[in-house]
Image (cartoon, rainbow, N blue to C red; front, side, top):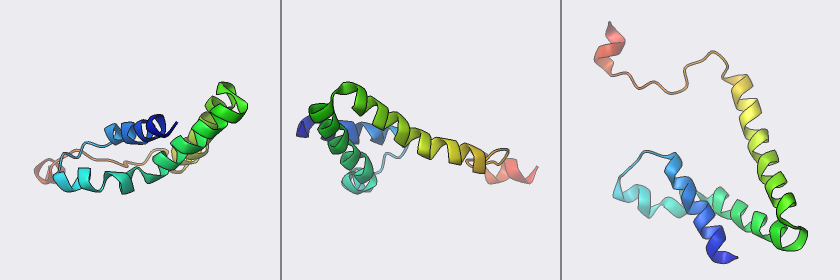
Length: 88
């Protein structure tokens, strides 16, 4: 249970594009909520079954994604343009 929970949390590091050494040193803090979520989902899996664990993961994701999509609709959240491209 502990190993799969840690793997679940650390897998979420792939959500970031940072390759700095400090990023990896601070990775337990950066993905702390995912590590905690991994322990919670593992507990749900053991006590109530896989369906409840999957449902809890889906509900959590929906609680984050739906309001974010609504609040940021039509807005640029991440811009990959350089300063030179922005000045044009």
